[in-house]
Figure 1 (spheres, rainbow, N blue to C red):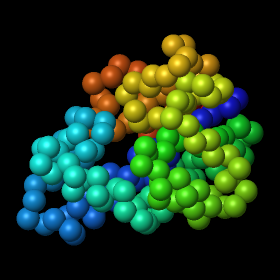
Figure 2 (cartoon, rainbow, N blue to C red):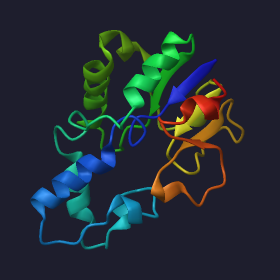
Figure 3 (cartoon, rainbow, N blue to C red):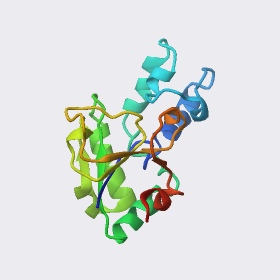
Length: 179
């Protein structure tokens, strides 16, 4: 079985890194706690006048490289591989990709090891990638293929809880995947 695993907010804690940097840089400005976020894109969760400051943070050098792993994610993915599952990281780079692409590779190498770098699939259209399951926090994934070859299982986040779809966390993945 081939399992495609998204990176941002599934394996690498994008939201925690963003909030840490936001609070350090703009302590006087409002912020949206993750638990209260109802919109997938963090930038769209903020008023328009603050959106340039939001982008500035996640576009800066080091942002993607320095994200902490989501609790249990690294261990779960390594366990999946040890169980004989074929694992690939299927992640979308930002449109302004200058730091993002390189740092996603560095993040995987640091947290999984150099041999896992060969398992990175960078694409703006995940519907074109062949797999059995895609674990992703994005509520709705669209692209060229109207019926992708994979089943979309939501990684549970506050902003996707209004979507009725099978979902998992790294604490319940074995039950959700029937392992």
